[in-house]
Amino acid sequence: MKYLKLVNFEINRFFKLYMVLVGMVIVSQIAGVIVESRSFIKEANMTIRELGLTYTSYAEDYGSLSLGSIMRSGWFVLPIALCIAGLSFYVFFIWYRDWFGKNTFVYRLLMLPTARLNIYFAKATTIFISVLGLVGLQLLLLPIENKLFRSLVPVDLRHDAPMSELFTFFDGLGIIIPAHLSTFIIHYGIGFMIVFIIFTAILFERSYRLKGIVFGGLYCVIALGIFLLPFIIVIYQEKMYLYPNEMFG
Amino acid sequence: MNVKFNSREPVYVQVMQHFKEQIARGVLEPGKEIPSRRELANQLKINPNTAQRAYKEMEAEGLIFTEGNLPSRITNDEQVLHAVREELILDAVHTFVQSVKTINVPLKDVLDLVKENYERNE
Amino acid sequence: MIEVKDIKKRFGRKQVLRGASFTAEKGEITCLIGVNGVGKTTILNAIMALTPINSGEILIDGKKLTKDTFEKITFIPDAITMLPQMRIADAMEFMRDYYKSWNQKRADDMLGFFKLKKEDRISDLSKGNTAKVNLLLGLALDVDYVLMDEPFSGIDIFSREQIAEVFTSHLIEDRGVIITTHEIHDIEHLIDKVVLLDEGVILREFNVEEVRETEGKSVVDVMREVFHS
Image (cartoon, rainbow over all chains, first blue to last red; front, side):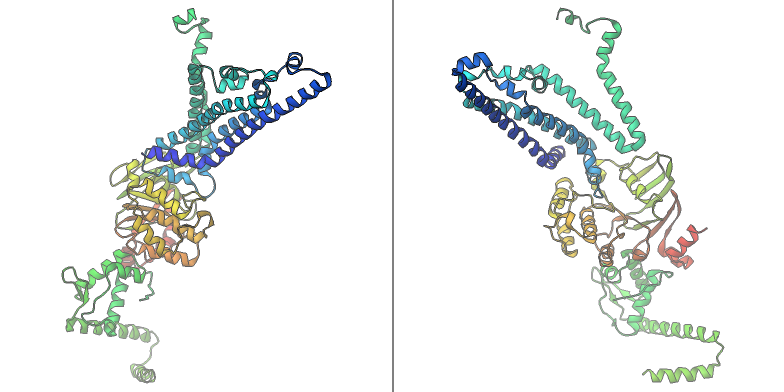
């Protein structure tokens, strides 16, 4: 199927850049756990030696270390922010790169004997797979990081939390990895919808240039308006619900 | 084969002319196989449709003939071959006379000059 | 037959095509001539549905273009339409992957004829060789119609001669070809038909052999007449 071939092709084109992001996340987060744990232990050991405390009494007086507090550090936040920035940039770049330079590859794509919608969906799929891939990576990394954390920090000096609680330690991660499937679907549904809207606006611009920017902008506003319609209705009607069953919620 | 084409005359006519010259000079012998239209187009760097047209006209004039699916050949018809030679000579003489006439030279002087020049070039 | 019927195209305030109409037959080489910027490329883009037109109609064998038409018609733009980091072999594989009409044997023949090396990266090729690869990728498709945008511009004389040779070969035979140029000299004897374009309209459309025969004029003679009156 040509759609799948196109997805494969688009992913291959993004692969190097994507691997850089993946590598950065892994290295930075693992390093973060090691560096933060070590410096905490070092400081704890110094204080313990000076004051002649035990691990338990140190933890009582000065607090214990949790993976959650490491997750709030730049070691975790920065690579995630960079991934978000990188992918947001790629939402645009995935189209504009085909028009760059003298080798306008988009001509080739547009002249393929397949529905042009397949190109659109292939590019969107690439973005979605990349996003979900990074989310998956984070989910995979957390237990590993947790294990690493446990092996580095003595049990008396750390505060262990169950995996489900880890996600709530840090608000940003709560959006990226929600605790419930329904929230997950809502968050990513909205995200992917925004990608579709931006894609369409980009194609307006590419097809009609200046006029297209106006069309594209208008389209975005209308799309946003429709999206926010429930809220607008709620505010306008001065009712706090849309469906009767929300009244009991 | 290398022919310099004039851009104001139909190329197919020039191709025919070229063949006639080759036949008159004996380069293309009677019965000799000639290139296919595609080969000819390629050799002369012309449009295959033009090559096709030239062959069609030559076939109509009896200069070449085709049997079944075999490659076309130069005619064996003595009469046609003779006529080609005749035509070329007449053409050359005609051109020559035209240009000489414009200078107003008496025929006798011209003929003497022609004779002298022709023999010197032997 | 490709029929271009009264197409109009505006870029912002600039009206590029003001109702251009002409036809191109299968088995003939039609040459679209005009100075730079008169809309030759826009016409080719419009035929391939690469740019939206404001009005008019384009038919290929009596039908409007659909996705399946791309197995019947191909466009060779003036720059290569492959990623620069691809090797020639990758580009050919890409084509084979997507087009049913891709003819690998013909591609290999052309590779030999043009003396190109499969392992070469597209970004490392000379201008002439890039043009040849571009031509190869288009002509190795078994399609009925081929559109070429300025295949001779900006390349060395030997590459030009080699490309001109393609026009007299089986690679072009029996196909319908539309080629644009602003320079007729290289191909005067290779083409069947000329379409003269100026400021977005077709000024004249003629068969070159016919004009030579009935009017005793060369293509350049007609151009001089049409463009300077």
